[in-house]
Length: 345
Image (tube, rainbow, N blue to C red; front, side):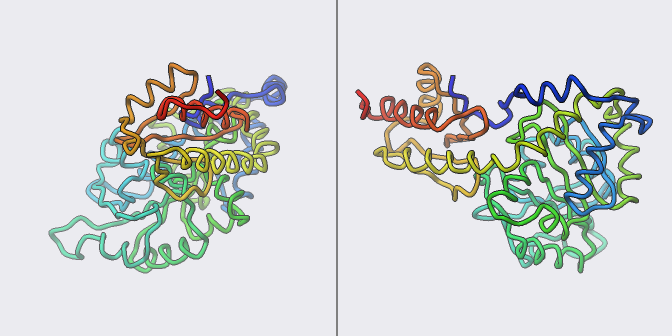
């Protein structure tokens, strides 16, 4: 199966498995796991933050961060298709009692003026906005990236109006590789940021939330509340360390494969790539080829290529488990399914 469903399909390779096997471990809940502690130091340095916290998943990072930064009845601002709103089962509302106001955008990035327009009026009848959430890269807008200047501009407006800025950095390292900017520069305008290791970085589990020392100390309580305190977590953290040391630069290959896939699909009559392909995610529309997304997905699956579909669009995500040859084969299979033809036939 050529798995383009998601970059969560990555599996640890031989080197990562060996690092996991050799990991030194201790009690993570007590702060005594040396491998976890090393990972936290690495991420704090990488993002330019004072401290960091190890958590099982990125969704828990968002859950803990929002709980730490808000009080019940307050408002958070999230891009209209943000992961926090669309893919986390209402966790922010359930766990933190916050109201979510949305900011619309074309590509996942918005302006300071958009932030001001989304903020509730400053009056006794409305819940105050206290957190602005940004997503780097933006999943449902096609892996698009913020520039440092764009982040600085919206963060300045947010801070001037009393909002903290939280970055959902699930694919932050994709943005780093695609732009040539450092993770520290992207994280600098934000009060909190996290990195997921289970996407293109290829680890089987784990995410790290970073911020000020005070923020992390307060967040530690909610790590416990939400069941995130662990024991010998070094076996997981070892995979994350290996990912940082070996799997970051190779993300460029995933980006090149996404461009190749976009070009190949765009050559098929009736197929339209709908997003700006900045990194490793692309969306495309097959209705022009007179085939609905669900039908196309099923037909491709039967022929050994797995895509996901979101609403009426197909989504493809490249990752370390997909080769250039796999991309070429996926394009040929799509031609066969959509037009009944293949240049290799």
